Image 1 (cartoon, one colour):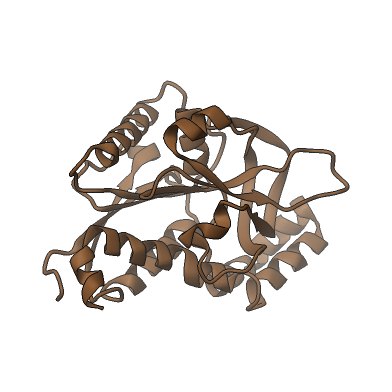
Image 2 (cartoon, rainbow, N blue to C red; image 1 turned 135 degrees about the vertical axis):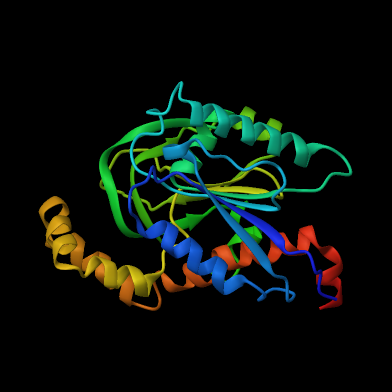
Length: 282
């Protein structure tokens, strides 16, 4: 039986007004998901958090908090960071309370680093060099039992564009929250550095991801084929890196499974948690 009240989804936009592919991809995924799972309609609102200090209240069911440019420490002391951290605390407290309406959250890239900072899950540090491209992500033992990776191989491939990383997880903090590390970055035998944490399950309703599960391979291939972007990437990263990126976007075994499974699966499971009566009838 379809619920006539749409599931309310808030996009927390941390791109600071800078044109980007992330928002396009998220809008596309949510548009495709409208009515797809249990015939449930979605009502979507966007909040320009970094540029306009906009934050949603607790009257939404699902929150997608995006990536964004720059350092996760640049916002220290800002109004938007205060609002964002207050929202995280309120969401956590609400989900932790008995007999409450749950709130489902996915935090991506810059948002993931902000979550790690706020809850003191690990160290957030600058990388020696920028990660740029389509890279393998390795699933941990805890991750193998997590539904977020349903439909994906180990390792799976993800779009990874970042200058910062989450390292040295604080196991005592994770244990106190019931949080679990789900994935780590690719192994680099030639580099004597710790592997970054790429995904953390904070709770049944909340997950944070370092990479970009929203990356649409077809649309991004068109985007990065633009002459001005092609030349910019080659100048900064070299032609081999550019060709590797384009291969990852066009090879159906690379990025496509992540795009097709991760956020759509998160939305489906969130709707099932929010409206269990719908899932039972299917």
